[in-house]
Length: 209
Image (cartoon, rainbow, N blue to C red; front, top):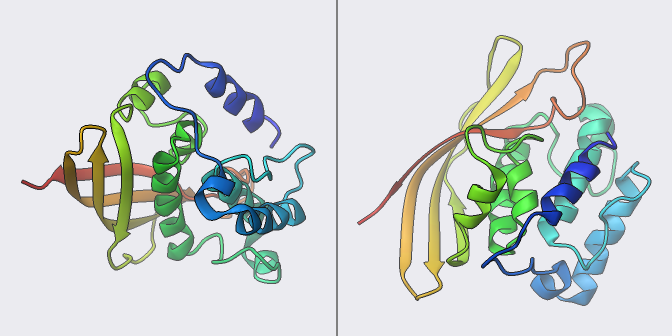
């Protein structure tokens, strides 16, 4: 559970050539709403030094809230104010996609990277992933109807259709459509809390012309 923070710290220490600093939650939402989100985060997080601070991106704070609620499991999370959708639900999977794009929009590439899991997006290095968004000024996602949660080989999967609107630094606008597949390990003996969280598993996006 504590191993996530050294990993995130290492990501932040990588070179930041041509990549702007992350935007804080206070900048995104305003001071009071950001502080309220950070307070909810602190009330739920079991971590000794959680990232529940309005100076961090909203996506990072929301990620810690989701991580903490996943530790509770569905039954206890349903009784915890601030937990939102049940950790095993398709709605919780959809929140991962939304959090992913909020992190990208805030230039918090470390939090976006970890929506793919602790090791990030398979087949990509973190530095290449981050540099791929260096020219993106803003990005927004709209979700389509959520697919049904399906199970296979001890895991659950759900497909979520998306439309992504991006604007580049030169003003160019881009639209992508497609879907993300998300995966979580079922609540079985031996599965860690991190494995039981939804993570991005696969992306199929196509740019519209």
